[in-house]
Image (cartoon, rainbow, N blue to C red; front, side):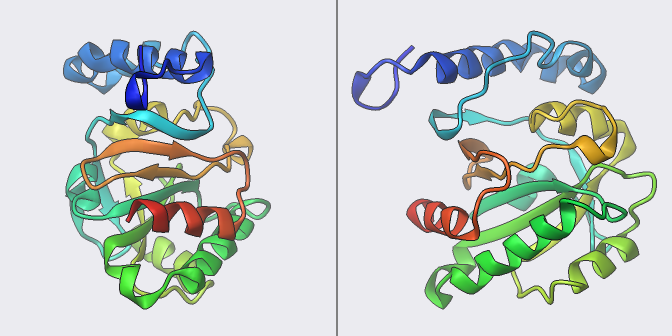
Length: 206
């Protein structure tokens, strides 16, 4: 498997690409089939640029404005930075929220229309649109940052898509994943990336 310019992918990216490619039939079979096998082999996901970009499955979301829309519809025409949170989280989620707010401050006005930030809840049973709005309001967000929760039927699919196991919510990962305007995964951070790193990468892709 090759990356840009015909160069071979490094082993981590190769395993990631092959793993997601192998999940394609399961996306068609439905979230239940995917959830039973996704990441079961402890795929060693690459950090940094994902080349070639990897198409992501679609799933339904209810956002902080009370609107129901698909992930693909939400991510069209803009580069999207995705983080996983839940509103009752009191340890890392406030840090994640503050980081996204700093990212907004670092984005020039000329690029903001081509970039969005998306905080996805891991707790659709308890995170209502109103709770998501209140969580966002704590950080005084600018336009272009929204929060959403998956529909319960799509929770396992969303977790598998963003490499989050269904475990204790407080143990969720703090990575940021960048999705391009064609709903493809193009970059994955390490844990708790800096606002500067996220902003710089978003601007390079926008």
